[in-house]
Length: 106
Image (cartoon, rainbow, N blue to C red):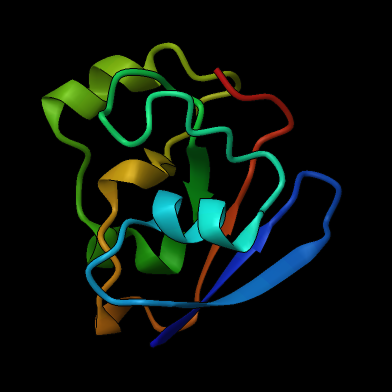
């Protein structure tokens, strides 16, 4: 298990134990993290699981695929560190990762 912290727009933190092999979106939904809507269920067909990745982990999570980049165009308040949590697989390398949830999804 890997510790990951989701930070709501208002600052409330949710530290969760994430099972490797799942996506961050799956972890957030199972943990009931507010603000991760995941309308498409992880099919990279919406932008309702948008998060801001801690810059210290940018290289670890890697670059967004072209398909993810297309969906991020629909994300509210997109930033350089924006990613779709459905496209980030949990691995041991993500130990200590913090992601922020934007105020609005989609």
